Amino acid sequence: MEVSVLKSKIEAILFITSKAMQPIEIAELLGIEEETAQEALLDLMFDYASREGALEIDDEDGYIIQVKAEHMDIVEKLCPVELTPAVIKTLTVIALKEPIRQSYLKEIRPSAYEHIAELLEQGLISRSKDKNGRSFNIRTTKKFQEYFKLKGDIKALVKKLDATQDLKNL
Image (tube, rainbow, N blue to C red; front, top):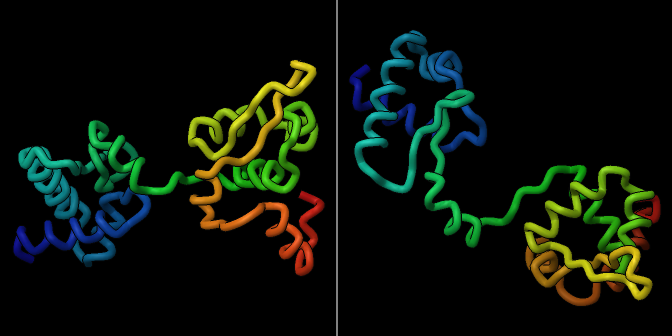
């Protein structure tokens, strides 16, 4: 296979995949030797590095095309945040029971403190001191509603969902 065609095929694989690919995986997909895939990957990495564009091929845990760190601020404005299932569960509890005291949330979700920090950083929740000044009241933000494409009152949405599912056990 011609080198430019091989590099184009590898580029397509790296572009479309959501995980870092190992040279052996690429070789198997393309029906070539692993060494050939490795050489083409190195050439492709050099091509990306020499163009001085916004993309790069990262090879830390395999190979993947990604946006360079200096452009991540733009990407974060355009792309929704990715949340782990555990953080989504904590966010669900907050949305269903808001406003919820942070201390109560910690009882329900023992790992809540680290989740709260992440959700605050992402702008999906806000918190304010409760009237006693001992804990925080946590609630979702407008960004939360935009992220999940929700319209209207969360409590009204919960009532609609509650008719079809048991959400009280979250």
